[in-house]
Length: 322
Image 1 (tube, rainbow, N blue to C red):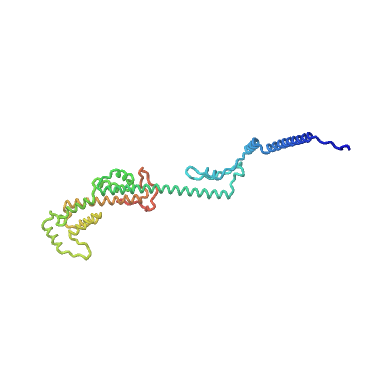
Image 2: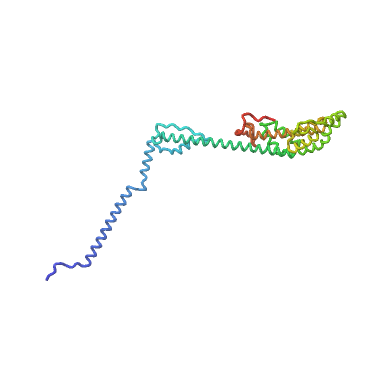
């Protein structure tokens, strides 16, 4: 019996497998090359021709990118804080750069808000500077008062008084400076009353016998309303000392002036002159303290610059001189 087929040898099957693998590799390589070429043609990162062409087209047509509205607004604000008007649109400007009505209104509101804020900041800065100068002036006035109360010279306070209050209250400054050269204290006035006590209660030794007799006779019987101060010389002297100790020198002067015959004594006249100088100096101090708070125009800083910011409590008229 003859065989109708021939057995395949193992070497033939291996050659077919190798051929198929080679074919697949070739196909894959070709397909990868084609895919790579297509990708590079569509998304080439090294191709700048499109950007160059776009820039050339923009330069040729004269069109520019629309500026940022915030940047344009910042460029319109001047160095002093004022906002410049919007420049007119030229005929060559791009339609994209034209602001819409809604955007114009929004920018106008924003500009108005910025101007309002700048104005408030400027006013607050001026107010702070003016208030600081007034506070410094008030401290100088307090220092001058303490120096006079102690009976010590003004020292560094003297030029500061002249600089800050010389224009506003020249008379008050002159009074304070003169008082510092011959200071009078409450202790000195009280000691003067103690020395004048016997003379004030008995009358002046140079008044004569008849004047002393009449004074003594008038003091034998005194008629006054209930609750009113006693007019007796001893009681007046006690009240005057009490007024001096509390700083009410005006009331002490009024009590001493009512003593009969006292105005003819030299020591009494000297005491009255010191008491009046004390009062004038304190009134001048009150004036410059008030000027430091309320003076509307003439107050100056430590550098001599005028304080333009008025005080919130400043009256419409200037502070009267003493």
